[in-house]
Length: 317
Image (cartoon, rainbow, N blue to C red; front, side, top):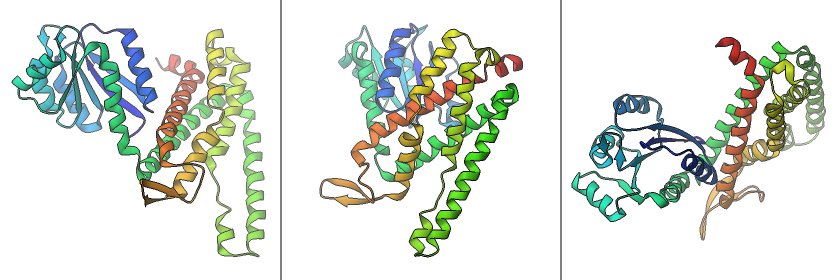
């Protein structure tokens, strides 16, 4: 699993307000909502083919009243096409007990039912249940590695674009060179000192290259904030860029630091469940909040990238 939570929403009276509420509830669960909406079952087979290849949807929200059909009539096809995907069947006009009877009459298994006035919260509860599969060290390690890999990819793409577009950004490469050379000199010094000690001391000289990439990305996004015309940014976009820089400023500690800790602790059985040994900085109880922080940073980096490569996208169109 990753931090993108795919939702297929089958609803003929789509509400932007409900969508925002759903996105907020997904964020609270520690994920980023990726929502695709359709008004009925037309084209559902094609979506199922893509899902089979790429696991696009983690949950399907199915309304009772749809365009030219009812949700209970569509439910058997959905279960056949998406056999392992969570399905929530809801309605604003039909009581919850009746929804269950409709599903039972169609002999569709594994479908949750909800009244419309609480289906956002019900969806959140189902997402929380899914998230519990990540509350093991192996799941969190894999998630942390995936988050850092995506952030690295986003930052590299943005940095290359910004350096091609702006000479001021290109000149900043000298500062990156200085960071790397200073770091290498420091590592050499530390390793030479460790040579007089034991093998464990030698191991402590490991590096995290993602930190230097983040530091350089910060330099260049600061240039963009100070020279918005070069990057095609209007006043609102510049303010948004600055806001995103502030919200992601602690990436090194909140994401890279947690990734490093997760990579070195071990999971053991305790009297009240699994516990972590090797660090007193995080516990398994912290995993949901760590996921929320990871999701917030990935969301910020994706939007930062969209802002600083705006002109690239326009030229490609």
